[in-house]
Length: 583
Image 1: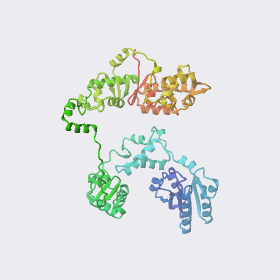
Image 2: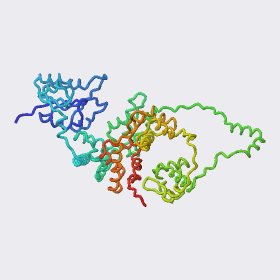
Image 3: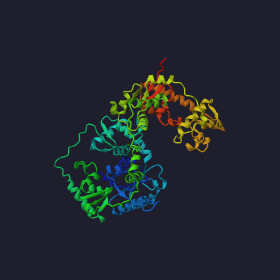
Image 4: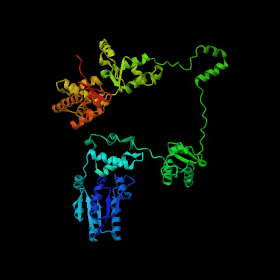
């Protein structure tokens, strides 16, 4: 049996993506035994995604600091190592993984020395380098054909990886890096998830807590009694010894924690009744912490005593002195003295309800988000203790009010109040010409864009710029362009989706109108078919059906507002429901 060639695998991390790691290793192993496996880069600036692939495949990372901006220090380090390995005579060939033509001369030199040279890189690799190798493998062409995946494959890979590495705090990024190293760049939209975290949340077998993932049925491993865990005294002695070697006997808390971890390993400070390292330090009498600096107790900085500032007497104090000197003045002022503070009057139940009803009457459809309504109440009455009215929370308080109707996280007027609102007499009109705009009120860009589309449709789908400008100034004030950061009306109009400008006239494109009608009909059909779908699922379906869809093109800052503008449907909380007109 022929003995395999011994090869040196050298990877330039600056020019090759980490997603190719499994493919590179499998291809390189076809030519012989990989005696050397090294990857070069500036790891202090980031690993370019190569950290976990290198760790999991026993590839030794070689640090190369960039001393001068613009100089490729990684290339120099890789070339020097290649020549050192060449002169040791331990290998019969080299596998150079790079797309950089700077390695052309190295490949030629290795061939001159009688070594077998294999190149691996992307299609963009210049011809001089590819032709200087005995064999060159193109990553783009070969890799895309071999690395295929579907949802079932990804789910199995995730469960296998978590099962093997579950320690109760498996980082979400580690799982994502593992999938990237195995299958390359994954588009989770193709399997119905807009983010990787949402994909993980869909697993019934997994539990995610912020950025940590674990198996749901995975019991926590009990700490063995015979484990040699460090005591608080041992940890403190390590820190004290470290600080004594420092000038001044103090150091930054992050550096101390790194030193303790490197010396004693990862420590669970909750064993000592401290959730964080900083709280652990505060309990040690031998140490003193001030913000992020930690001192030996004997070297703790002494507090600087602030000089006493002689305060000038207030007018009230001067008056009291005069009154003490002259009792007659004191007697005269006694009857005129006001209390130090006015009695605070707490709002009653009816006042709060009336405030909410008044606010909801100004809101479109008489419905608003629960948190927005609560903020309105607090802006008028401050923080309210709803236990006075027999309710633990604001939501429970709303449930007791007959004038209001609460569903999930939204609040609406009850039918009786809506009917009263319709019977209200219209307020006396006033001349808007003399209306003053509130200085704190700012014109919203999306609102103005939506108004431009509405006015264009109202004027038969064609309107002149002067007429449009007059309408917008009347509605939003003379400074509306400045408020939204636009220089001219024409510049503003060009930023509105679906608008076509012809000279001094604008119109909405027929294709935009047709696409809008198609989207609205799709929403009505989808809601009617699905019953009561979630807002999230509806958004996903629209984006799949209509490429490039963006609800902000219609002047809405929220997707739910766009849905509420469509006849026949309503976005209520987290769901969308069909509205059936009752005759």
